[in-house]
Image (cartoon, rainbow, N blue to C red; front, side, top):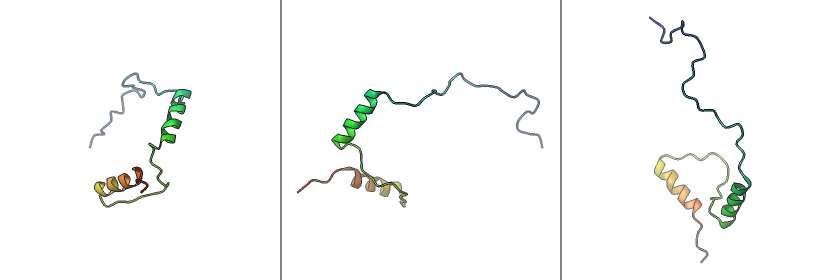
Length: 73
């Protein structure tokens, strides 16, 4: 059986020229905008942990139940 990779090829071939960003730091404007969105209540407050569901539909329903605020009646 022949190997899938040609061993005779030199190592170090690069496809494309994309370079990952050096730092993933948000700007002060982004930080302030995120704080305002959170203060307005647009981010769901879900407890951290592992949640297991039998189907995607069940997971979607659970997320809707826990992310949409209930009316205060």
